[in-house]
Amino acid sequence: MDVVVSPDPENLKQIADVAVAAGGHVQQGEALLGSAFSIASALAAGEQVAIETDLGRLDVVQGLDGVPSYPDLRSRASEVEILGTTVVVCSIQDLKAMKQAAGRTRDLVDLEDLDAAGK
Image (cartoon, rainbow, N blue to C red):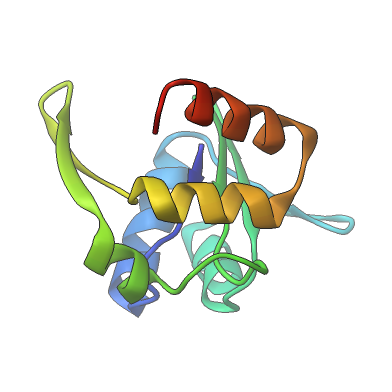
């Protein structure tokens, strides 16, 4: 799952705590970061961080070209309920712009699917 997170230090700490509780770790070169402190520090750098967890991979995509800031994304986002939890989802326009900027094969296929669905 790709996410953009609020850069507030307390929020980054909470994300790191949840990641560790889910067996999360971050590979940085030869190092394997597995503590909440080290994961929060990696997130605080403001770059993309891939957190491998027992539940799957979580890509924190802040700092990538084409990814708006959290406040900009949040201002255009919608709140939806998924399995009893409120989740903030970026606008379809922001999603398309980020997928276009990424330009990976999977993202381009997703764009075609969104267009075919009339989104």
